Image (cartoon, rainbow, N blue to C red; front, side, top):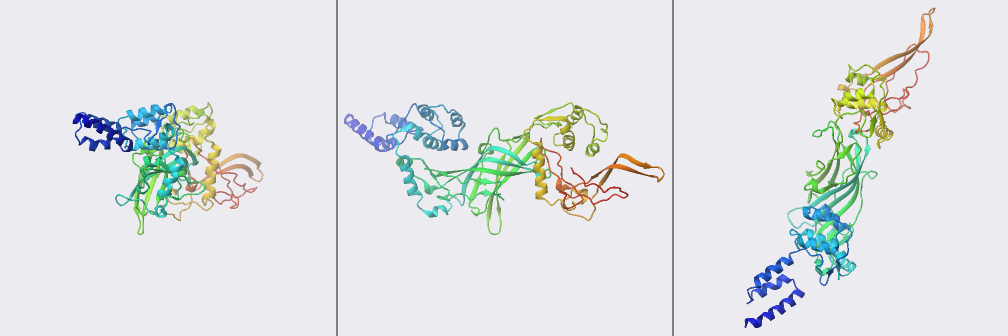
Length: 543
């Protein structure tokens, strides 16, 4: 009889639900003679089993009043491309485990078999669930059964296609200027680099073992061979760090980094000069093209802290990006990845003083030659600072030649500067980089315009001589002679001493100059004065 068969089905259903997956039980049962409600029952349990639950280990239950602490699993969610709904929920750190359980179950797009649900369980289950197995025993079992094969460290885990996809993301926490403009300058970037990939060989059943992730050493598994190109041990570090291996085969490798990024010079194309574009190059020349580095949407894979900018600039997260490309040689295929950091000026209008300096009511009593060459009509001295500042900010941009000359000539006299960017630090930095890093005591290249880097000629260096008579003394009408005190100024161009100042940086640097090659820091013309009564004094300094 039908009525007598129904209790038997219910008994079998309960027994099955305790041992196996609940929905799987219904397939054989519903193929038998079950009342009309069977369609409703199957639909209901299918819907329930598709929800994302925190406590899925057999015998575990939720701890309602516990507030889970943030762990490394949360950072994986923040750095991954989670949905906007999940991202918004993660911003609230006050939810209890019971509230999290309801949130996960009520979020329609969060299903039990989704990657986001898996990561949320990895974060929450050990903090929010009673009745969980020993974590240490689970991890020891997984390592013993999954990491015992030494060949795994050498073989790239390619299971689909001809290469392995490695995803990249970057967190930038801090940046600072370490080269104030020589060859475009450089900034030091501090943060973390995250590489993630899938190794099918390392999968396990988290419901059976009791843990959904383990931490391993870099030497335990295969890892990508991506390193910073032309790395300097003194300035560039990629810290050795532990690696998270998840039960579904996903691997996350987060490395703390400190990198020096070279910045563009004005003759590099495709970049606006008002911006500072600083680049870090990475290279993988060991995996022979079998690894593809994928960056995705830069706005989702590059995370920038609010205080990661340098003085007078903002690090533009909309333009900052990661670019990956492949190049080939006769013997190898090389993967290259370039991080491009776009620093945009906070102001584009030219002012003598930057944002941290106040314009004073000072007076300009002398004008330099470079200013007069740019403004031949502005030769009258004695104007107050605000007159020159109005001239500059009404017409010129912050990176124009006129603005740079104005700042170089008037900043010291016109600005009450409390900038955190030390002018002394800047001058010392430029001086050290140029004098210690370059040969500056041989004659400069006197080629066309004295700026052509493509070739050197036999032309002579053009040196301008300015003689200022200070005083006539010892006038003797009988011998028809006199003596005079003069100031001699020599001007020439040496492109080796050039730099492109950052906004708020220094515009002039002082070097020790002497005709004596043992004393001078830079090349100076060899000259002598006829009819001198006393020897020519050693040039005290050069700007």
